[in-house]
Image (cartoon, rainbow, N blue to C red; front, side, top):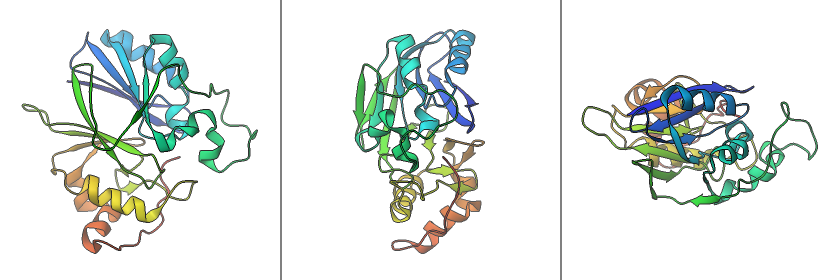
Length: 237
């Protein structure tokens, strides 16, 4: 398994390229602000052939390079229907007035081939099987992608801005909802094995076991159960 990630752009958003091995087909996860040059560097270094772009949610720091990356390689992109509008209108996802400048020039809009993700779907791409879980709270259309455990390789959760090392996604932007985030943490994260590797939208990698033991928000969810209230987190776009 090859997973190559790098932080991109003004917000340091993690973009990941995932392939069964060097020299094979790959999936690109969250090519955000100014991510296109880094994507091309990884493709050249590992001799990869992109077959799809998949998006954990629609915030501009995760999707700003979708159009150029998909166009350069002639591949489709996948996003949940409830976040699709942000591709063409990123200001709505940030609660900003139309026309206010973002960080540098952005190519907004939908790629030529855009497909919609659904909860529980199994994406079979590049010789991989990624399970999709709808995980609203940070945005209405947030999702996670999970690779199953295989041989000596632990399961991997691409968490987007749902769960971080030591924190969780903010809920104060349009479409955010603390109750939904709590439910997503309980439903998507808590059932996973402690060995599951968590690759988040920002910051370093962690594991479910580490976060179960030390993350104040995940501990809060586990202890409080249904009806818990979430102290306001501030991570993510």
